[in-house]
Structure formats: structure tokens, C-alpha cells
Length: 416
Image (cartoon, rainbow, N blue to C red; front, side):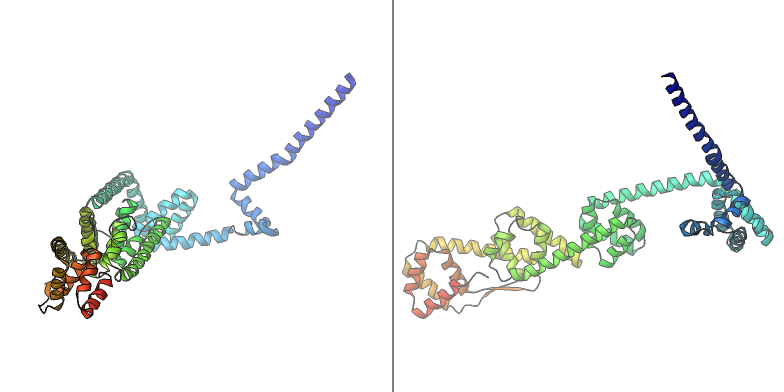
């Protein structure tokens, strides 16, 4: 047993010796050669000369290293470039080179002196002055940047607190007067909440908004904002097309979708109302029972008109028309209560007189120039629509067939 153990021990010892010898004759020389390669310029140049002729990617890699002659030529080109430069710019570039490679810096200074000793002296003096002021300047610049950042953030918060009309107006004035640059305005809007930023950009002049976005530092954020604005524009176009269709619908039918925020958001409803016939809008709003909603809707229309056109020319007219329609509806309701207590013959006589009346129409002229005309025939039809169907049928039966036919046709038409 002891013999076997001794043999195993000898085998292990032999393996260790082989490993040690391998390290001594292979690894250590490699480490030494690598050390010499990276510390000895002449050795590195000599080695590169042979390594660059190797086939494949290894040879290509070492071909990228310039020869000493090529390096010297590159330095001479840079030295000449620096000597032709403004003193301050040359000193700034030499400062950067000095940080990166002290030896290259010294070589360049030597070459610069040979090219233009006086210019070199001025450059070195500038570098020394800059190094003395460096800490103070950096500290001052950092403070300036911090103050500017705080100023931009305060401006962003302010724009978020004022009305959208005032915010858009102020941004436009600041840019048009060059009080704030587009670059700085991009930073200010960048500090705002996304929803607020988009709301301002969508209501600015398109070219102005595009220029602001062009100064965004983040490509991702810039692209996201552009996509959001494009989506908003597409939705607005879609709503304008809906408005054209809704112009042909009856006010009673439109109240279901346009008299609340179940189908559309308030800003979307504003687009619909602003692109519909004014009289139709007034009739729809008159039919809505929620006074708070009507008030908010009119306020949104007014805001959007100012943002889009610089002035509100329709809200006052809409309110005037709403008041006329409400007053008209109230009077018709009062008459309906009176007529419901009358005999059919009496109602038929009144309806006939109203329909055959030659009285001039009552005209209402609104601020936007539109005119609403209400005739005695309109009153007659409105009254009949309020009465019970049985009463209407009895009234029509009392009228001559020609008049009864005319009234029936008008009763069958939807409210406009």
C-alpha cells in the first residue's frame, strides 16, 4: 500500500513541476513581452511592423497603428492648425490634449515654438491664466447653470397655473420678441407635465411648435411629442367631419351624444360645436337641462375660439340664440297649457288663423350676422307638437283637407 501511495505522490509532484515549468517558459515571457510592448515605444513600433503583416483580423487591427513617421506628420499638422488659431481657442485645445497625453502635448509645444515662438508664448500664457481661474470659473458657471435651471422650472410651473389662453399668448410673445430663445423655451416646456406641455404646443402656431420641438435634447421625447400632436390633429379632423354630419340631425337626437361627456370629452365637444351651424348649436344647448354643463361648454368654446382665431366671435351669438329659443319654448309651453283647456273647434280656428296669417315674421339678428326668423306658421306647428296626439288628430279633422295636409307634412318633418 505504501508503495502505491509513494507512486501517486511522485505522479502529482511531476504534474506540478510541469505546470510550473509551463508558467516559467510560456506565461512569464508573455507577461514580460506585453509589459515591454506597452512601455517601450521602439519595441512597440518594431513589433507592430511584423504583426500588421499577419493574415485576417489580427493583421488588420495592427495596420491601424500609425508608424513613427506618420505620427510625427500628424503632430506637425495639428501644430500648424493650432498656430493658425485664435489664442484662446488654441489654449483650450492644448489644455485638452495635455490632459489626455502629456508627451504629445510637449511635442506639440516644441513644434509650435519652431513654427511661431511668439504665438506659442501667448497660447501658453493663456493656458496658465485659465488654469488659475479654472476653479472659480467652473464654480461660477455651475451656479449660473443652476440658477438658470431654477428659473426655467419656475417659469414652467407658472405656465401650468395660468389659463391656457394666457400661457399660449405669453409663450408666443416671449419667442416673437426674442425675450426667450427657442432653445430655452424647449427646456422650459420640457420641465412641464406632459399634458400641459402638449396643450400649449397644440395651440401654438404650427411652425413655432415645430421649432420648439427641434430643440428638445431627448430624441425619444421629441418623437413622442410629435406623435401625440399628430394624433390630436387626426382626431380633430375626424371630429370636424362628424360635425358636418350632425348638422343634418335633429337637436333632440343630438342632445343624447352632445349634451354630456359620456361620448365625447369637453374639448372634443367644443370642436364639434364650433364646426356646426350656429343655430343648430343653440337649439341643442337649449334642449340640455344641465345648466352647469352648458356653462362649461360655452366657456370651452370661447377659449378654443380665442386660441384658434385670436378672438371669440361666436360664443356671444350662441348665447343670444339660446336665450331666444328658451324664451320661445317657455311661451309655447304656456300656450300649450292654455290650449289644452280649450275646445277642439277653438284650437282649430286659432291654428287656421295662424297658418293663414300674413303678419311679418319676427326677426332676431345676432352679433355674428346670422338671422333667426319666427313666423306665425312656426308658432302653430310648435303648439301642435306640444299637444296630445289625440287632440292634434281632432284639430286636423276640423280643418279643410288642403290645410290639414300642409300641417301634417310640417308635423312629420324633424325639428331643425
